[in-house]
Length: 322
Image (cartoon, rainbow, N blue to C red; front, side, top):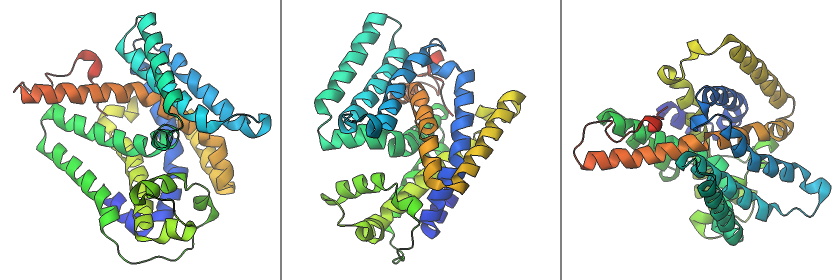
């Protein structure tokens, strides 16, 4: 965690580009295989096919918007992501098809109703598969593990996680020159949203977005959040149990990872375009785990307040710590 933060201060642009291109694909592939072995934390493994349906529509709309025309991603992006969230909640919460349909319908209606609200649009379309996934959900996993073990060191780890995140904005160690490769300047959507939220206005241009004090803080924060998210996953050896992964899965994952890295090395923009779907897929398939984790946090906090022993708030289906 501290190493990720230090590198984010020293080499923020390079760190993010490296982490996203090298660590990212291996994370997507290994986590999907890990989730598959655990039935995606759903009552039935085949339920994951339902979860992928809104993602398939989202990717088809994203890739076809320029070819087909008439597809308003500002509307359909939030609506389909809201549908994905609703499906994840419905699949975990109940097996009754009527309740599931009602939950999904309510989520779609909410997404449709509020899609034109800038904050809702930013949250559902841009931040959910990016910063919410890599920072909020990672922090939730750290908190859940600390609560389950009533672990002072776990809570200290969460405090360090928050402190490192805050330090990216609070500490300003001088300016840096605008020598950023096009690979980064083409993916500044998250930077623009966070900058607007922090300052109440859009950045006047790339110079302000990336080199002003708040802009530098955002760049460092994104580099830290992504790098630690990936490294935190690879470090969970007792949970992932790398040595028990079938050889065929391992060979397939390593082969696809090598191809992914080679693609990024050949053309970073092409790598982003080709692997966009894989990145989004792992976000969607993790949503049931995220939902169970937040439910587990609520149960553990309730048990702690009631003075019950560690783990008393966790049901059999809620043991989702990474």
